[in-house]
Every structure is written in C-alpha cells, then in structure tokens.
Image 1 (tube, rainbow, N blue to C red):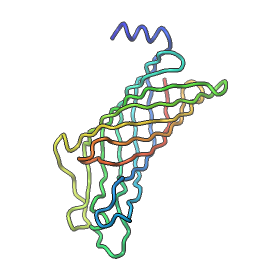
Image 2: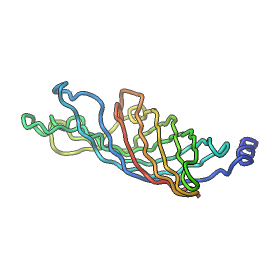
Image 3: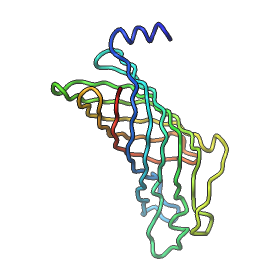
Image 4: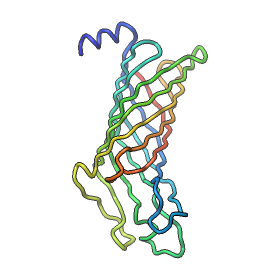
Length: 195
C-alpha cells in the first residue's frame, strides 16, 4: 500500500474532500393495487467525505464514506383508497453508503474541468420508518443485517471550478431486489470541496 501510495503521489497530488447535497428517490415498481399507476418521488439529503487517489491529471479513484437520508416516494393519491393503501410501500431510510468512484476529468477552459465518474457502492440502512399496517401512524422498521444491506452502481457528472470546488449530479440504483432499499433509483445534486 505504501509503495502504491508513493507511486500515485509522484504523478499527482492525492486529496481529501467533503461533499453534501440533496436528492430525490423513486421506487421503480408497480403499486400493488394497479399496474397502470405509478409512485411519486421523495426528497432526501446526503453528506460525506472521500480520499481522491490521482493516477495522473485525468484519472482518479475516490473511496468515499457517506451518510444519507432518503424517502422512496412510494405514495399514491387515489381518492378511492384509504390512507394506508396509498402509503403501504412508503419508507424513509437513514443509511451509511460506501461508494468507490473511478473518474476521468478533462479541461474545457483554464479554470473549468468536466469530471465523469462511475463505480460500485455498498449500503447499510441504520434506521427506517414506515406506516403501521392499516394505519396512518408511522413506526420504526426492524430487520437483520441482510434486510438492511444492498449493493449497487452509481454514476456522476461534475463541473470543477478551480482547484477546490466542484458541482455534481449523481444517480444510483441498488442491485438487490429484496430488503429495505430495493428497486429505488436516486438522483442527486451536490457540491464538493477538495482540500
């Protein structure tokens, strides 16, 4: 590891970064009452940090640690249904995410660069809320490690302005189809500061 770190450092400077932003999420499955209806979108937020390993001026690899809140938006507004039927699959989740992003950047002017990145992530939900069965009251979710775990892919496009600030758009989707966070696409925008 020390040799690899020295090798990377000889080409470009490795840097720590912090980032934060907002997100919207959507449960990508048909509601249980009808296949011709669809769920809405729910809001969320995230904050995290990473260590950018620069191979050269274009390529980098960034392991990250992220704390996130998401709302899967799985609610309907059908007047023909009771409250619980409209919100049976709704969930709000607090999670810890570990993305690893491989990025390629290139300059478009003296002070602006574009960055494209993609990579896998693992996720462990640490807390969640859902509606109690046949009720309009929320309750805490419970489950094992496997119920809370997921793995997926994320991609991002970012605009870097100068040496420290970048503005990013990201999307992510989990692979596992069971558990707390399933079939939920996440779109987010944020800002990152690199030291």
